[in-house]
Length: 86
Image 1: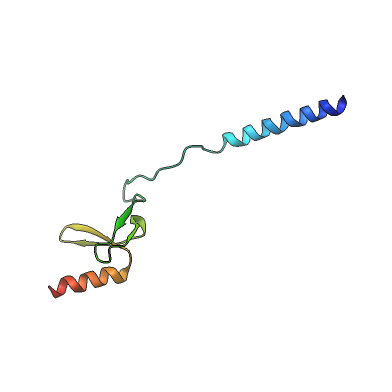
Image 2: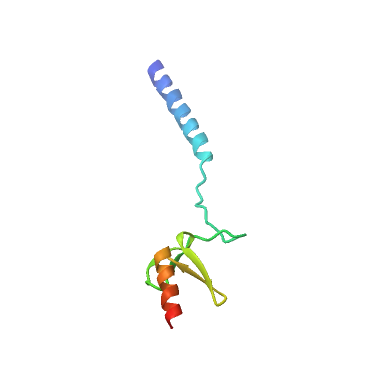
């Protein structure tokens, strides 16, 4: 009988500790927002090589008042070369 009581108390203590620890973990996923220079984590298409990549990893170029993002410096440089040839 004592063994059952000890097991019951241990189980209740385990449940109490588990629920206390889960309260400290947020169940809601965080969503990045575009505020004050931060870039939202969205997939965009490279205008030169047509590859998709996260905007936050892109290489920025402002051309003719338009913001362009490239997947790499090489794609950005090739885009500039082709544009200057025209």
